[in-house]
Every structure is written in structure tokens, then in C-alpha cells.
Image (cartoon, rainbow, N blue to C red):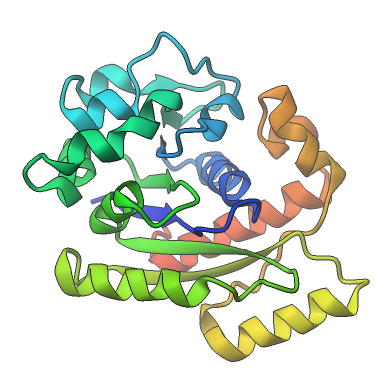
Length: 254
């Protein structure tokens, strides 16, 4: 059985794709087989791993059933890490699958033959049908939250969506936790946001936090994970710890 983790937050710019890609890379480095499902029409998880977004069978074709998963998944440079790529065609998917039967289960159906230890789904910054598909097939949801003034804004809506998915399509969906991103321990704001998130989420808050880090921010522009770009950076060390915590929280220890 795979652990399927939807990395979701409808706010943009919170480090969602960075978290999905680097947690996946951290899991692969720990000798787990990992598939990243790029479910964002921007295709940032795809390009962030140095893969070409064009001329490929993508998540769009897989959702529509015109391509199979095995024929669409691409290998990365990292042993054990694979990607189901995405490009701008995926923007039309919500309309195209809206009239199809069992539309909330399209991704679940597509992934039923997947044989990986972990499947990480990089969700789009919206709570539409694509995200509903991700939450319907996921075993867990992981929420990256930027340590800024409006950090909690919109989280209630996301948690409400998670609850509705539990009631309607996926009663076993579990909140894996909240990861704080772009954390700056030198500022009182970051510390205040961390305290507030801790009050709301208690033990669901990951003990590892992701700092503001230049090397981490640079990595996608080179089509690399932070581990490839600078494995000794603060960002790399932080995501290594997050990956370890993911393994512990999912019960995936060997």
C-alpha cells in the first residue's frame, strides 16, 4: 500500500511545490520509491526537477483516461524518484472532467495501479475539482503555511473542504500536519505565527520548520532539488528533517 500525501493550500506562494518536491526527494534519499504527481497547471514541480513539460503525456491525459499512468510517468536524475508531469493543458481538466462519471475519483482510478512507497501530490493553489480529486485519493494531507501576517487566512476554508471530503468521498483522509515555511527566527512575526499555529494545531504542527534560505529559493531555477543544489544548506537540512518526520508520522519506518 502506498502512502498518498496531498500537499495542499489554496494560497499561492506558501512553498507548496518546494515542499512537495523536496520532501519527495528526501524520501527517495531515504531509499523509498516515490512518485510526484504534478497536479498544478503551472507545472512547477515538473520544471523544478529539470523535466520538459511539453511534448509529454501528462496528468491531464491520465485524468481523462486517454493515457495510462505507466506510460506517462518519467524518471528523474534521483534514484527512486519519479514524476507524473503537468503543463498548461491541465488548466482545462476541471471543465473536461466535470461532466464525466465519478469525476471526484478520476485521480484515484488513475493511481490504483501505482506501486510506490509514497505518492506526493502537488495540488494547485485552489480548492477546485483537481484538489478534490487529490484529497479523495489521498491517505494524508500536508499543509505548508508561510509564517506571515495572513498565515491563518483561508486555512479554515481548506480544513472545511477536507472535512467535506471525509464525509463525501474519503472518510479515512488524515491531516498529516502543518509545516511552517519561510520561517525567520530573527523576527517576532515568525515567532508569533508559529505560536498561533501551535495553538490551533497542537501536535499536528511539524517540529521541523523551513527557513528562509537563498539556496532553497535558487534551486528550482536550476531544475534541481535543494539537495542537488546545495546539500549542506539550511534548506536542505530542514527538508531532510521534514522527510524523516513524514516517515514517522505515516508509520512508514522500516
